[in-house]
Amino acid sequence: MLEVTNLEYSIGKFNLGPLSIKLGKGEYLAIFGPSGSGKSLFLELIAGIRYPGNGSIKLQGEEIAGKPPRKRGVSLLFQDYALFPHLSVRENIAFPLKLKKISKESAVNKINEICSYLSIGHLLDRKIEGLSGGEQQRVALARAIANEPKLLLLDEPLSALDPELREEALELLKLVKSSGITTIHVTHNREEIKDLATCILNFTQNIKP
Image 1 (spheres, helix red, strand yellow):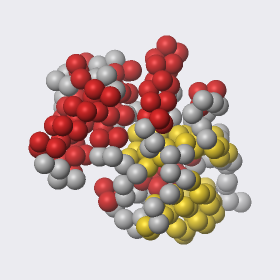
Image 2: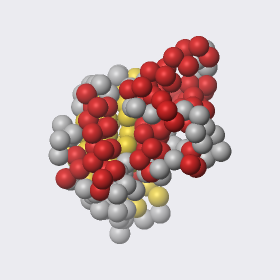
Image 3: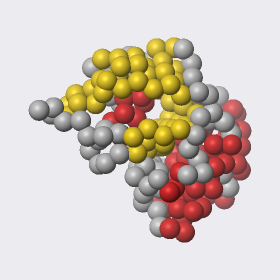
Image 4: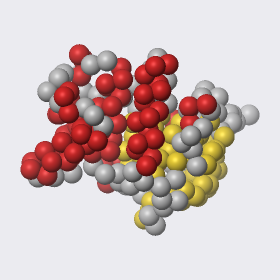
């Protein structure tokens, strides 16, 4: 499903890789490692926010390393959610669907389906700035899966939540996992993914001399 081969990226004195992994459809990969070890950088390379110096990234057999982000079939949920505060929940979730030029009727149906699935239908006309942290996380996740990505990338998705909301969010991620979406989850907390991860990858700092 996802095959990364000899992936390398350098910035300043930091060097990531060469890194190779294989991930099957429906698997849930957890990535651990200290701050500055390249975990988030790896997600950005997969998503197309950065381009590797060397190596290959194949998704369902197709090379995507040189493709723009919107053509990769990958969704990235940022640590700070990166929602548009001046837009409504509905408009935020619709954003990736507009980029894919999905018809208005199809977009409405998809948004309603996802919001029902994630129990946020009552928030559709609310502005982001008026939502709680837990509500914002649900909206961000809804936006991430709205365009039915082949691969979902989660960058420290629970780090900004208090313990009660974290437990609620974990149940939400279990729901997403049960849907069969292949997922890569970056975290510092091994405990939070013990019931989610099907495989684990440890990153270490890699600084050039």
